[in-house]
Image 1 (cartoon, one colour):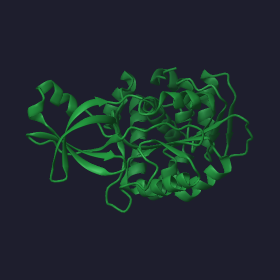
Image 2 (cartoon, helix red, strand yellow):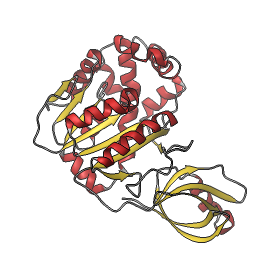
Image 3 (cartoon, helix red, strand yellow):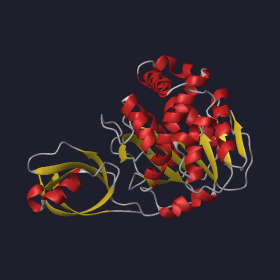
Length: 338
């Protein structure tokens, strides 16, 4: 199902008196995340701010999961939809509702410490679904089904060490990270990636090989961008709050113990400033970073504009025209859809 603002509002734990009251609360939550990091958890004690968080992030993250899925193998998505879903650091159920809406058919588990967040999540779940929802502060259940563990903007808050503790306790078959696309988090992600490779997990995204990340030890970091089409109501709220929820940077990494496939060899990892004569990309080609140059003289205006709309994260297939000073001049053959 696609949850809208109108449908969600009656099921919040706080009743906003006006649209402006909601906008002010969204702004307070956002400011807390960006400017008051040391007091980041204070909003968890306030029903008004928990409800504002729910309106803004639950509704905008539901289409985010669908956008992330388009990078991943359809066979794997079919597997994880049948698996038991574990939303770690679930908040108000942001990704639980997204997974349910995309056809998740296993049992649903939420690990969340905040009493208000758990209360908010359960109130929404009971309003729209008759299925059982299991909640706790830690993993305390036994399940014979395969387990799909999702870190939805939670690994960056708990850090790699705590995330690894959860992974060891839960022992999931499949893991997906959807985290902020920041340099600070990427250093933690590298620790998690190395750990998972040591435990014989297969990398499904974004790497083409299960070897050392070429960005390890550099000042660069691997992250992606997605374009998300938001519902008209939430788009209006976003504009009023002056928050862009259409073009979103994020760090996505996917792993599985029971599923593997041949990853695409070329992944766009950075779109550099366009020049008068060319589009400039950094591509991870078989775990090596290479500068790609796509000359505009080889394309018409429509094709050039389409190239300008391509975002980092896409798997691509190219033809090499020539190599000039460690830069590959290439022609794009296709964007690979899995």
